[in-house]
Every structure is written in structure tokens, then in C-alpha cells.
Picture (cartoon, rainbow, N blue to C red):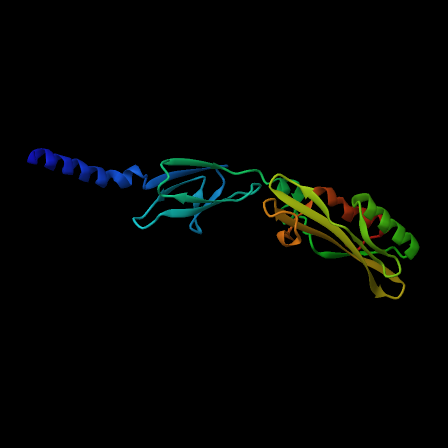
Length: 228
């Protein structure tokens, strides 16, 4: 009987000793695409794959994956997760794919630029051309004050799978000097996460503009003048 008792306790101790191994103290992380940067608890630990080793006091780690052209993902990986190898796949960033920014040599979002009207063009003609370009690209114009030389469109919201991007344009007459007419133009661009919603507080400035609005600048140049 004593022998059986000792054997039982020996088996139990062996099972307890091997329990941490059963809970997969070391897990291999794979990320698609392979170019994705992996952050573990805020530290850059590599690209594409990484082996997470849990300490005795670690119940979980926070992982973040980032890659150009893809939506960043943050996950909480528990030590008790039974999988020893886990693959995460990032979703394509539709907003980035459909927009342009500094990386493409276009730094226009949320900045004023100046268009100087040709000297042979009257203010009346310039205003009509400004309005024509504005309504061509934006459905609703909130402010159109010719006396003040001020145009502002309503926001146009573009819906992607994971993000909302909203865009609007503002034009203000700029006084450069006698017999010189110019306008300041700004294309505002903001982005929000779909999970947050449409509320204003969900949107933050986006340093890219959607490709469909990129041509506004060249159109203004060609129609009114040059000096960008």
C-alpha cells in the first residue's frame, strides 16, 4: 500500500512539474505580411515572426503589428493560450491605398496654399471659376460669400471597411496688395475608426488626401493662375 501511495505522489509531482510546459510557456508568432513590424509590450522585436517567452509572473503580453498599407492590430496574448504557434493576418489599409501623402510627394492635407489670380482676370470671373471647381468635387457648399471671398464645403465622408475618411475644402480671399488678387485654399482631411463611429470626436487629422481630390490643385492652377 505504501509503495502505491509513493507512486501516486511521484506521478502527481511529475504532472505538476510539467504543467507550465503544457501551458506553452513559449509561443511562436507569425504575421502576414512578413514585412510587418512586431512590438511586444511596446518594444520593437522584429519583423514577420517572433518567439514569445513568458516569465513565471507573466500572465499575458501585449502585441502590436504594423505594416505600411495595412491596418495596425493590437492583441493581448494570454500565457494560458494552448496554441504554441499563432498566426495573425493584417487587413489592407484601404484609406492609405486610396490616398496620397508625403510618401508619394504630396504634402497638401490640412495646409493652406495660395493661388494668385492672373492680372487679366476679373474678380467676378475668378469667383465663378472657384465655385465651378468647388461644386464639381463637393456636393454641398455650406458657405458661399462672394463679398467676403469665402467658400467652405460640407464634409464628404468616404466609407472603407475599417475607417471613415472625411474631406472638405475651404477657400478664403487673401489680400496681397493693390491690384493683386489671391486666394488661400485648404483641403481638410480627417480619419476615424469604424468602431468609434461618425461623431466629430472620433475624427483626427489625416496627413493624406484621397486621390479623387488630388486634381483640385492642378485645376485651380490652370483655371485661375499660378504661384503655388
